[in-house]
Image 1 (cartoon, helix red, strand yellow):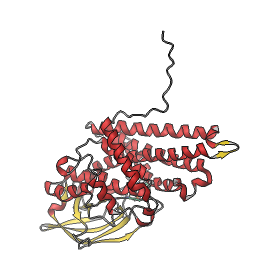
Image 2 (cartoon, protein in one colour):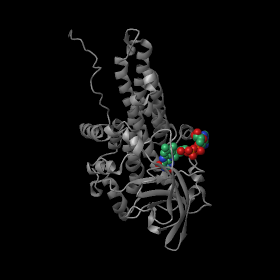
Image 3 (tube, helix red, strand yellow):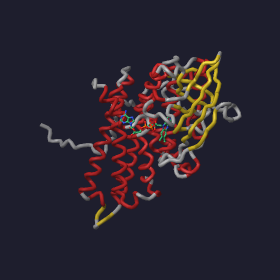
Image 4 (spheres, rainbow, N blue to C red):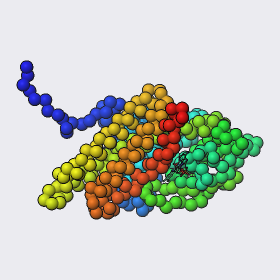
Length: 399
Ligand SMILES: Cc1cc2nc3c(=O)[nH]c(=O)nc-3n(C[C@H](O)[C@H](O)[C@H](O)COP(=O)(O)OP(=O)(O)OC[C@H]3O[C@@H](n4cnc5c(N)ncnc54)[C@H](O)[C@@H]3O)c2cc1C
């Protein structure tokens, strides 16, 4: 019998089953770019917002089109590249930048690809993948957020056109967007069945707002300061009938599909963001001394790291397993909802513990956990609140 001692490999890379060597290689090169070209600007962009050129640069490098077909300028990769991208973006040190990019890659472009006509894909998907046009998604309104069927924006047919009236609020990229997907009611009496999506230019070639559209105000927020968040107004904005995206009256189902991809990527952003906070705080706990030893050597602190690591790994595995189902052709709404709910809670708990472990320094801007703590709070609200996630899960059991 061999007397060799098999030792645990605590330092080995933890490869996750959905990722091939190609995913990992692409991840390494994107991560290197994020560290080199985004991370150094994390503080400046809190004041100035992330610049459009950053999106163009990402497009030039192929990072915006990882999962889209090559014929539209994408890289033709599988769904897992969306998770790779979300993980890489977590190295930017700027939740606002990550959110602005995710709106483009995971909220706006996927519906254009899935539902768009060839002409719409040429006009919006191709320049969107290149980063030459920036998009936004307008679902939420001042009077209706979680309750999408309660929206009031209308798009009423008038000959060869639709006339859009109404307003949208909390719209990420809304102040700068060249185009948007706008959710409106084509039949205000028909509830869910009266909702339709429109894919519209918001600015002309000179960058001016198109007639009937205005950015009524930009909004100040608790966190995500590098991202612009706007209230948009539509007043008799006329669009041709071919601005419709997908089928008339099917917008509620289209947007429900969009939200699944958005939630999975949000879950990836959450566990990856939590990992970055964990790493930063671990470094600190190994250096900071109290009572003659590094604080990480106190059992109370060591156990906090153990709890965080376990939660992060759980969130990651749940997201990966769900992404595998999604990519395998299933439409696992319950599991996607669980993954998003769980990962955003984990991210929140990790952020809170990291601030605690860093003590007074955790509360200071220069240590960056302070910003991450504020930025991550949105995850339990955006892309569906915790309460709505719980309701979707509960209802899926026939309750
Ligand atoms: C920074 C930021 C960026 C955003 N970006 C975008 C964007 O790009 N595009 C876009 O369309 N939207 C965007 N949103 C909007 C976001 O998706 C909504 O804020 C979110 O869906 C919640 O809607 P609400 O704010 O209207 O809250 P409400 O729906 O009014 O909810 C208020 C509270 O009531 C609870 N609640 C509501 N209904 C139920 C229920 N049935 N059961 C139990 N509890 C319930 C909620 O969980 C919440 O706690 C953004 C929001 C923020 C803050």
